[in-house]
Image (cartoon, rainbow over all chains, first blue to last red; front, side):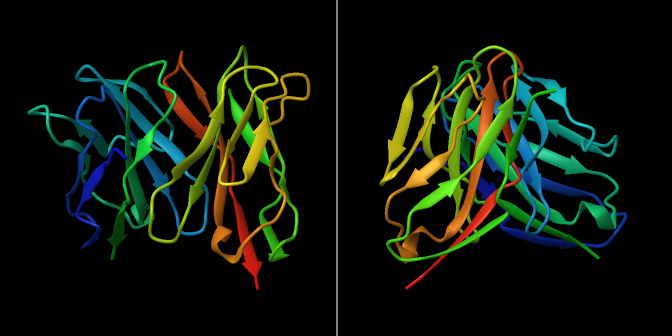
Length: 114
Length: 112
């Protein structure tokens, strides 16, 4: 089936540094999402993105977070600066449209802030 | 805002047992309802979906029926296998807000 690819699978970073998580969504998809999952807990919506703009962001999407899809390929989540509480698995997802009946997820990037 | 509630945080069964995981939602209109399954080290994978009242979704022996009256979408399987061990998420998608909202998840452990 369609694949969402996330790079890297695991990243360790010092607190206060910047990190960029990369996502290669399904090729014909138009809506993009980031979700956060702290170990053993539920999937929590961070942000969605369409037509070059953020549509909605949750309260978990702090001012230090930003998203973009600069060249129409990778959809990125940047955290600057990182904090200890940002340690989690971040899942990228994509769907074909607003009335999409399926959202496809990547395998996640495990971010560890030390 | 819209929300999804799963009653069971963890379920432990033996092979061939009957499975029920309860899911209730709160949302306006007719959201699309989903069951996703997540295996260790993987992202959530779609099990099935339903978008209308009384519609039944099913896959791999799992099934759930969209019930707008009780705002429920309970997951059932008649005979579980050890390979069904995973975390199961009920979720809803509202086209107007273009986002998928997950329940808390239910960890299913099936022993042989």
